[in-house]
Amino acid sequence: MIYLDYTANAPVEPEVLNTFCEVERRCLGNANARHSAGRQAHAEMEKAILHAADVLNVEPGGLIFTSGASESNNTAIFGIAHASRHIGRHIITTPLEHASVSACLTSLQERGWEIDVLEVDRQGIIDLEHLKSLLRADTVLVTVCAVDSELGTIQPIDAVKAILTEKPDCRLHVDATQIIGKLPFRLQTADTVSLSGHKIGGINGSGLLWKRNEVGMEPLIHGGTSTTLYRSGSPAVALAASLAKALEIACSNQEQRLNRVHLLNALLRRRLSTMENVTIHSPGNALPHILNLGVKGIRGVDFRDALDAKGICVSVKSACSVENTPSRAVYAVTRNRRQALEAWRVSLSHLTTTEEIEAFISACNEIVGGKVG
Ligand code: PMP
Image (cartoon, rainbow, N blue to C red; front, top):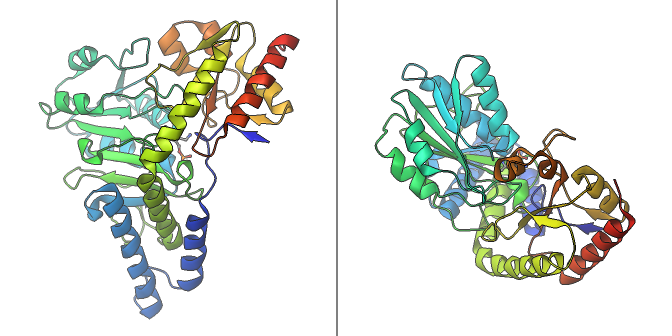
């Protein structure tokens, strides 16, 4: 099998799995319990929080361990919306958000919140003048992904923050799932930041939300007291420890792994440029791990299935989106429904080999030659 879907899920790092197993075996108590086993688990949880805070360079008090970026996004968006509802019910977003952001906004819209979507240019970069013109006294939240999972467009989060400094009641939520561990990112630029374990060599079901101390946010998961006010339940100590380890490994190897993926991306683009009828939708300066493309006359789902039949895994849109509908992200940059239906995505990692890329290109040529779809 040739795996080219690292943006959807990356394999767990062996050291991360070891950390999980070791902590899970050692900590038998509930970290919320007031006896020695509970205190031991609580201390381990505190250790994981400090470890992750150190790697991410944030205050440990703002870290909330979750089940993944979907939960983090839901917690931040509903939490801020509800806590700010007396100030206003206007939210600004982008057409490139993951379903775990856009579906929260649709749900809020059905309950009376107003949602505006920013214009993007041909590269998918948000229009900052449009942002300025949309901001109102009752805007309580702007939510922008640092890098989207379909095109890999890198958004100017610093510039968004600079615009929002004049709006003290408006919060900035950043879905950083696809940037953390791949490119440098300063969490303090935002008010809340989401990330996911399984994109960076962590374990499925682990994620984080970071929240600036002064941000008002109602919890999504209510219940008893826990290590954070913002998510009740018995802390998943071993998952937290494993995520801190995954962050450490991804961030400490970031530069070297990024350089490798840049080379792989350049090779992939060179090879694709020799094929006819291929359109690359990802901008040249996108995150190199993500390359969105389409072949004229072949629907993305058919190309994916044809590659799958040859043992090659790629995705159409993100794994959590609805099948057989045009890609919202590709439509936003092309304004072309056909291209949005033909689009699919290759995603690379430092583990990808040049041989895999050459085999992928041969398979694409065979499929195009055989005209699937
Ligand atoms: N945001 C982005 C940008 C993503 O790519 C994903 C995963 N496809 C998510 C959020 C959701 O992450 P998780 O699977 O951890 O819930």
